Amino acid sequence: MNLYFFIARRIYKEKSGDESFTRPAILIATSGIAVGIIVMIISISVVFGFKDEVSNKVIGFGSHIQILSQTQDENRQILPVNTDSALMNILSKTPHLTYCQEFATKSGLIKTDEDFRGIIIKGVGENYDLSFFRKYLLKGTLPTFSSQKSNDQLLISQSIASEMNLDVGSRVFVYFIDEHSEDIRARKFTVSGIYQTHLEEFDKQTSITDIYTVRRLNNWTYEESSGVELVLDDMCYINSSMDYLISNVNHTTDSKGFVRCAFSIRELSPHIFSWLDVLDINVVMILILMLAIGGFTVMAGLLIVMLDRMHMIGILKAMGASNMMIRKTFSYFAVMVAGRGVIIGDVISIGLCFIQKYFSVIKLNPANYYIDTVPIQIDWGYICAINLGVLFISSLVIFGSSFLMSIKSPSSAIRWE
Image 1: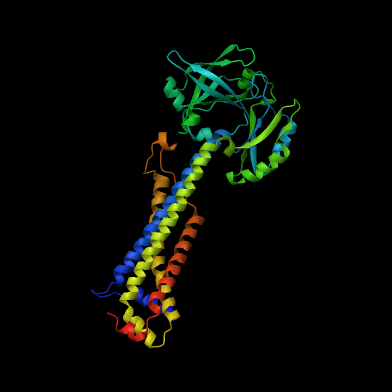
Image 2: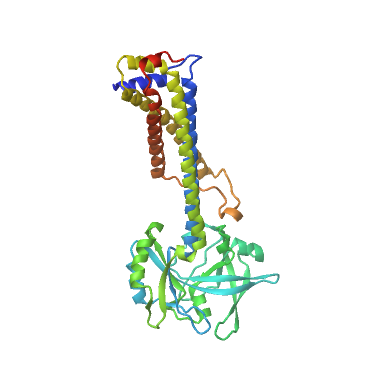
């Protein structure tokens, strides 16, 4: 067995007497590291969970990338994108593409006998992925969307339903203004379902119906759409996919001469993602603070142990132990203390994270946080990095602070009181 490790283990496991400070110092150092680990792991799990939850909701409304028109008519209205086979063939070759889907939008005024409000009707076809709205469906059913015929069904949010006093099965008129003739057109819809994502910025204005209806309201052909949504395998692939689209789609014209461009979800909702990016700064500050506190706690605990073990240090040096041997011994001791603190911190923090993840013990006000419970995303890579970082910094701090004691001469160390 390694001599340094053997001595360090004896110091760590020895049950000291009433006048010894070794055991309390070990408990303090272990507790400091455990608390630091708990705070760091829970902090990154909550922040990553929050960012992932909010990002997925924004992406659910607008996908990862959208192909939009940049051409306006004489009334400064954005003209449609011509989604012909040539464009769709280019989009199908986008790296990391899961699927692409056309959509059409139209602003309208939803009105009941008691109230009215503005909304945006989003039309989608039969190939549109509805898993996002299915996940947040509160009541009713999702409409049967089609690009060939109208079913006059409408999916609305709980915010709109509450404000307008609507429920599943309610029939409601939506009024639209023709941009060219300025005529008002009315359309009667039946509420087939109600969803709620708690992302009020979108919930308060977005309703879903079939794309056939919206195209007719816009006086568009079956190949004209407000844009095309591209859903990728993961958000981390946005940059590489955008590089391809910038080269092959941006500032190109379709058969009607309309200019089109690709926009990432970060460009379409910059305020939300900028806000989420600020959270990373908070995580960094927490990690730095906890590592500093943990390092200080370990250093203080080690100095107490070294002072308490000064006689032992003197005897070891009298027997021929070098300063490096003393430093290595206490470095092993530090790893034992830090290792135990890391294990305790991991067990408690991961346990708390799993409890919150699967039982949602801590609730939030969705009006302020966009979600109704504290989200958790456990990233094992970051947890391993935190553990290794704590062990490394603890060993480094201990190795440096051990210089304060290892330079003592044997006689002075033995006479230490």
